[in-house]
Image (cartoon, rainbow, N blue to C red; front, side):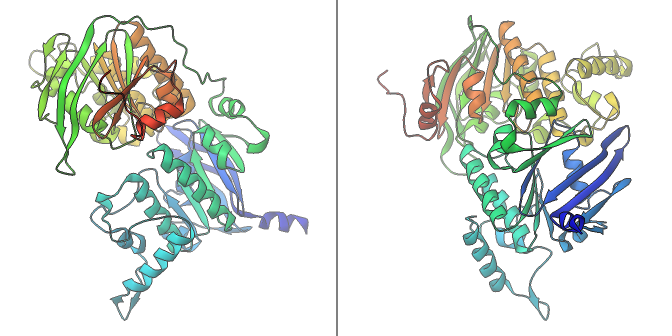
Length: 517
């Protein structure tokens, strides 16, 4: 008798789930049990099989082996509609919203209330506003998705689940694209949802967040189940070694910088905004020297993106001068900038970093395929050389994929896509490495590896310009911090002597360096 009660205390059980893809077992006999009303974290490295497992629960994939039970009864989930009927909702890592629709239209899409075929929007609006009030999810129902922040888009996704009365809520890497303020708001929202009796599965590899909100945490590594722990009985160090299989150093080891001459010099750079009439970047001057890491810190949306686009050649500047290794490159094309020694790890890896439907090897030679090593005199690609080169980088940077160099890049996990870009950009042996949020959405093992690569570039006498939204990274990696607020550099800080509080004041625009200095 006891056994039935125990079974019924689980909202969802995934028992012995196995899911295979070509060349890879993504989930290898995994069992996961979610209690009613708990926040259960799913932790693992990039490519450990977390998203695949949740996609099986949401009906996007069918497992080759294993069963799913809801409230102790076996269920079959053939597609996301079945999942919705069972009260299972999912917020995906890359949101599934219609850009040109309003918030309200996105929320009711697929379950539109109608009478005799006529849309009943006012009842829907009332319900959405009540839900948003009740759960502290403030939104503007009439705003278009393309005009609102990523944090607001995420709230729209959460309301979509609540509007459908979902009881089991899956969040796939929900904080990867949020600002620190939005993250703490989301944590509170998750706690409120659990208090209301919702059962939450929360995929993450940010250990602080898991410790802060999860009741229990299950760890996956390379597609296998490692174990489940109560967060109150564990530590971040224990979780990270369960996840990576070794101890991880959370602190960046580096010797003091010995900067040389200016590699990059920017004078009075002004860049227009695509969103409004004001300029996004206003009269910015800065320099980055050989052998130092300079970080541009700031809350998302303060001109960092436009600044980097102008610097890398993706957008024209309104005015100003950019000098690389003593040469004016203000009007140079992207390829010219690349050939003159600029490497760029872009903010949006899908849009500007990779051609997703190309193979991994073709992505690794994207900026060098025309060199004699990879193309013969008649213009034909030297496929064997490309394969050998790609395999060396895959090995050196531990890029994991189902079918090695010939894997289609779209099928790789986000973290491994990121490693591929980093391998390509660093292997060009640049004079200036621009790294924009290089560790966004990566696990602790990959973050440790990438930070080491940045420091190694600095120690080899290269100039590194880092743009980051992660406070830990801003405090730990660079030798100098420049804070950007509303398109201007408002402060220069020394990471050895500043505090997170002081940095936060500059980032929020509450403090700025005196003009007289």
